[in-house]
Length: 251
Image 1 (cartoon, rainbow, N blue to C red):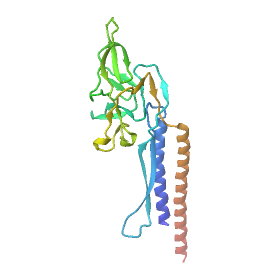
Image 2 (image 1 turned 60 degrees about the vertical axis):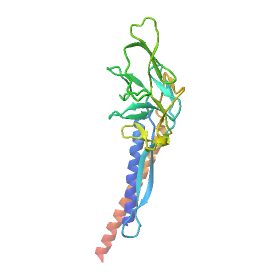
Image 3 (image 1 turned 180 degrees about the horizontal axis):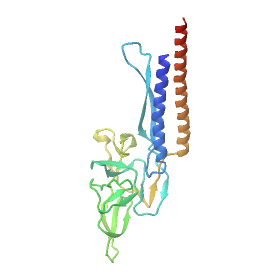
Image 4 (image 1 turned 180 degrees about the vertical axis):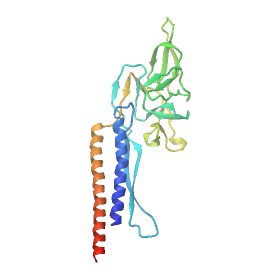
């Protein structure tokens, strides 16, 4: 009896974890560069002094879908999309350490620093934040070079002032942090992101989220049914236990 209750409880808990991942995906269906969370559930035996007749389900939502999202043309010179699923833009996290993202909707803050739409400072190819002097026009080249025409320059001569830090890394070697940024999963030097060269980006477009909202909604319905089914098993087990106790008292 208690074994069935334990299995149902464990299954309901795993369904709730999966629902949390699906809810997060749906909430970010229109977020620039967002990569859908993946969740999986695995059964593990409960170890102890007695016979291993119990198991529990452990859910993992640490993985992500690395497929590229749909490109959306914006015409904004500060917007760009990366040319390849293994390319990442370097930004600084809250602690000032380098991390990587696909959110490439750039903006300028009040101090002239280049950030993305989440307010994360963009790093150059030397790992330093990019700060731009006053300008009248700006363009980003295919190799990540930022060129500006300085404010008051009547000649219209463009000057290269920085190069956006773009690295190449196999998505399987990265892990997503709680802040949504990606970092190397291991300290192995061979798996560290390497500077990308050549035509690494397309200016004037943005990569949308790769979340399939319809698929996620169907998955949410399926998970809700799984949760309800496990609750029914728990209720049935409780009713059977009450009936057994009644019979024992009658004797």
